[in-house]
Length: 635
Image (tube, rainbow, N blue to C red; front, side):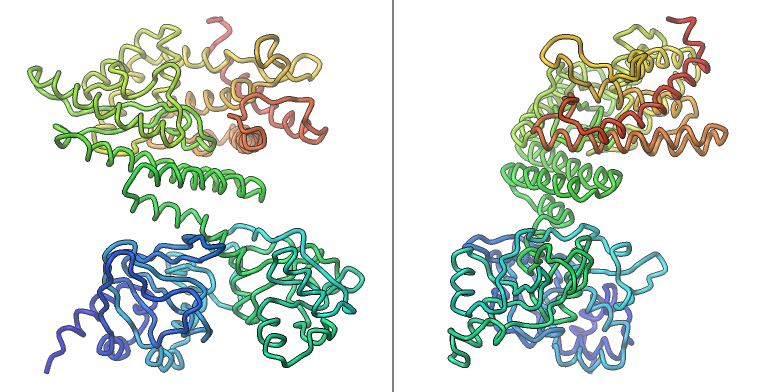
């Protein structure tokens, strides 16, 4: 007799790894034995420290949050949704669960027999490697590239894992000597409130004692508490160098069945102890994982969650900067989070309106957010474009979108994005326009390039669609390029604007600093270094009709391909921009500011030299613009 329920389960599982690499007979055997579990919101499937189940789980519908309880706080480590696996611990390492699994919303789960999968693993090496990689790294679909080659467990490295962060280990490990008694060591651990103590000899780690050792070996009476620590310490210790990634650490803990790793100067036991990395540290870091933050954002139900996650994003940014993660990677991550926050603020605001939007519209991020370069929390720059409507419907349509925009900007302000002092926001009727109005506005700015018009173009040309109908924005973009094509002298005016700030160094190679005001004697890294590069990239990209990407680094890379004769200059500009953006972000974090103004007296000699090294491409690109657009004649 046909088992239609099993076949429906099979149809679902076959589209998700690792089930997609199974033979049909193997998959059907699993499907026949699946238990379907319905879970109400906030109900647990298992709890931390609970004995392992006979099953692991796949999410059919809904969302399951994985939480680690620490100091009575529940830390969200990951969110599993459709097709994700969780609860793999009894399959790989048969001991207590390290986390709790709770339904974040009403959910439907497939419980899959551990024993049946263990049988299949014996004959299917691919699924074995998948489960090890998935368990160790929290990666749901660990495929290295488009041809879907599974990771080789023995060769997993930070270059092919999504979590490329250096692990954030404790840099002040608690230590004792081998002559210390177990009682003394336990007292030190209690006083310092730590779960482990390292035994050192000549500053090198020779062993480790954890809370688990005290429970199993001392509390049970097997060994006297007056004995030396060498009686119960685990030795030799597992050691790694300081640049170990989170993923490598997880795999090492799994492989060696340990919960602590020693960080030493050269990564061997025969070198100076630098720190210790625990499972606790890994869990805390994963609670701040960008993919987890984005998932949590997308499922958020209120504005308070947006603010909470934006604050966590600031911590993530600080961590990335400290670890010297490439700025292009940082920009993509932070920009994605910023965009999702904005999208959710829009969704919440639409829900508050008494009716759905009357016509199609798009929400545009302008300026640094539009270029995907807004790393620190700065003020808002945004606009709305809505579908053209008959004249008799125009006022009510515009009124709707202005009201909506006010709700959105209020929410963004609550999250932490300050209102724009110049009111470059969609809540301003000047920047909430129909498609045809925007076309006319841009055409006026381009064909009548007054100083104010050119300044506005530098803001409004750098837009990206955050929410809504992309086709509207595509039509607007086509109109802009058409206007520029018919009035090419506009590029000369943009060029003149790009030279409004001279190169950052004076005649004697001294930094050009502010002469007066609040920031007297400070260096304006935004106006004097970053914006000349932003302006140059925008201008040359427009001249080559390069569309759909407003990011400064990407613009320079694209125009390097368009002008191979100037390739080195453009790529040097891109590199300089990366360094300057990283520097500004670091300054902002350290000084709890926008990072715009730099106190040169607080910089080291090497930092000043590094900055100066970024300035030559600025001078060279400005020289190129000066010649190309005959700007000397316009000054």
